[in-house]
Image 1: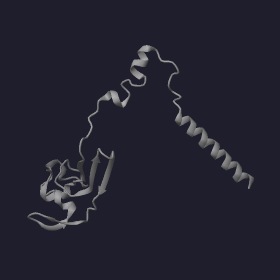
Image 2: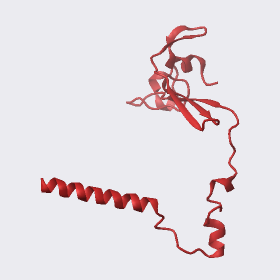
Image 3: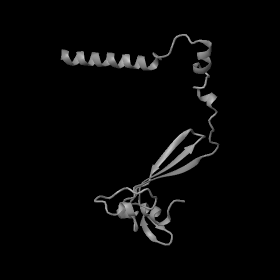
Image 4: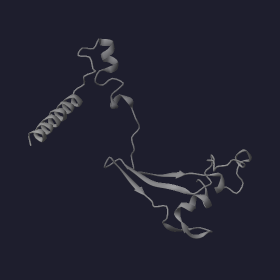
Length: 143
């Protein structure tokens, strides 16, 4: 019983010390010279307000596609990759999509919403009929 109490006390003390050390800025000098303060002080180039970053004015949607194209996925792979004894990665967008994420940046709520689309979802692809959604990139290509 005493051993478990000792471990709990030691763990609580270590956690408290870690929390205090993370809340402080131990590597920052106490006094900055005027030249240093103009660069590193509050409101200098390191502050968000001085960077003049553009801000969104309306919601924006971005589709992130992750594709892995192997030599066996292409009808005519590059000549230098044909006689390898393994399936090499090809720098191409002409393949199946393994990962599909729909990102929505909303500036009003200051939130990012991520929707992961399962690659086996069935969908209608124009001129090809109903297929898995990961085949849409293969048939349609990048926009």
